[in-house]
Length: 299
Figure (tube, rainbow, N blue to C red):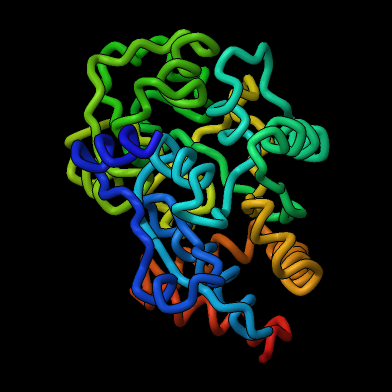
């Protein structure tokens, strides 16, 4: 598995390596994140919350997609990753019949699956971030698009853009084809719901893009989020997944702290935190520190 992680890192986003802080403090909790801004922000929230109660932390942020971070977590290259319920289950059980729309049952299933891998699923947050299918406002008006189903008659004329792994993901191109019958003119690999995809949409390089439903730009009015009227997307609540060894090492100090962060994080707040990062261009660490201070997470 280590060879697989290194090989994947050589072909795309870099694989995780222990940071200098973790080398100095072998008892540090290494917090990792996927390769998109919100994941790095969530990692900062949980990392800083632990640091404020004396838990030593190292960071491995913006490393890569789940195909890299999943094995890295199991191997102990990272100790904690902020996850998303439905996508995590789809990665672990690609042949599952139906996605779960109920967050509690999805969390229980994820916990059962990961227990065999010595991983612990902590409490989920009310905050939820799903894949969103987005078009420019002029495209929506031209074709009368309000829901994803409305794309069916015109998908063959439109170019779709999203992260490279979208081709193989059940809640991306595969799901759009199987659930909605959408076959686009072509697919353009871009970034994970970030600046590249937004720029390609605005510049007309693509007509339809995959963005996240907590993207702060969706409130600006130039982009239209199409309704998922056939419920392709599962429950996608934010939930930290940690190595059992770390949970046992720090016990209630770690668990209670992380659960308290999750309990107070709402979808509206997560969207606003994204807005502060992507529109106001504030640093994720600063944004996270301010949120923690405002919610009573002092040292």
